[in-house]
Image 1 (cartoon, rainbow, N blue to C red):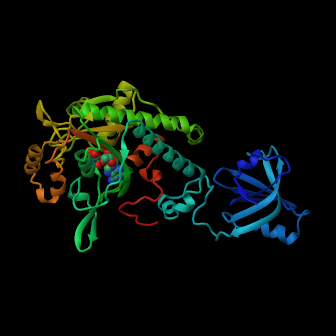
Image 2 (image 1 turned 90 degrees about the vertical axis):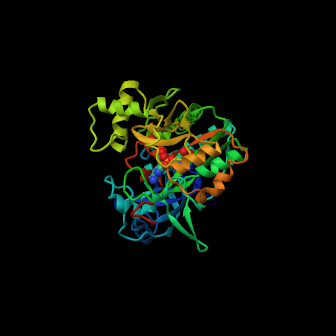
Image 3 (image 1 turned 180 degrees about the vertical axis):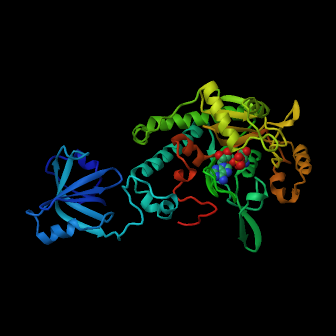
Length: 439
Ligand code: AMO
């Protein structure tokens, strides 16, 4: 007989014989009768054991199986209003597939969550909790929503190398890789490759793939490996085209999840607010002025960091009733190192670069790229960058490069903010950070 899921058994007729399997969540032994609660990925079903109806040693054996062991039960379905699923199973056979060791390093149904380190050390057990599965079901839908959008807009999905010879985001956060005796790095961003694909004439590409940053600090929004969602598009007239595309993408992905995950969101107690188009935009220097007006003070030069983003997020939400806003026109000195950023024609001290903020946290960075070879070289020289390291990338600008631009979005952060998770690690199955390389 083929094993079915706990919720599939709901559809079966009274008295029907079926086979279910899962993890033993709880045993209630009342002496002559006992109840086993067994969990699979769809729900918890109950098995009723009666001492009278089975041999005593089989009864004793069944009620003493340790919690979280895997059981396979074949039995008859009987309706009851005593269980959530409206039925219980009267067993014909119970097989202990694997017995769980005692004690468990982590409780699966405990009301109080264990300490974060213990949870992530035993992540496979931590993930057995219902709400964790919900997070990853929603994550899958958020990805589907994004892909659905790019499909509609004529983007093609690409995969670019993750072992690279030069970094896109500066040397400080590069992970070194020994590559056949040559120095190589893990890719921080697919940006330079996306740009080369614009030279290839692909016009619209997106990529969803891991990116690596050797961040040397521990925060609730950084990990060393994160899922980067990037797109690049050609023949843009200004950064507005990229800002609009980003806004539509975010809106579409959020609506997709809202429509497809109603039950999951309700179970997690999450409400998704769909932002209106166009999203609010505030130039960088105006953001600084707003912060000053709000009485914010800096120890050194005014800048926008974690704390300032939070203040601005609250301000925008209060004033304009939205969780999203773009910080636009990043000054050249703030986007230091981004030699590829196109500058505003009317004011070269400003770039076309922007960030998108979601609930007081940076979600996206992007902008229009400098596509003219000579200007690009000049901008590299200005910050003293070695052209040799980028030779391959630069070649792509010599033989016909269209005006283009794009963004990078931190996908784990997107999920974190959408679900109101306290830490980005909760949105990642097996996170990597300064302290963690295993499991
Ligand atoms: P940036 O460096 O701002 O831009 O990265 C883009 C987005 O990626 C997310 N992010 C991270 N998420 C988790 N952990 C990290 N350590 C981490 N670092 C970044 C953030 C961020 O907004 N090349 C540009 C993009 C482009 O212009 O195409 C870039 O990578 O949400």
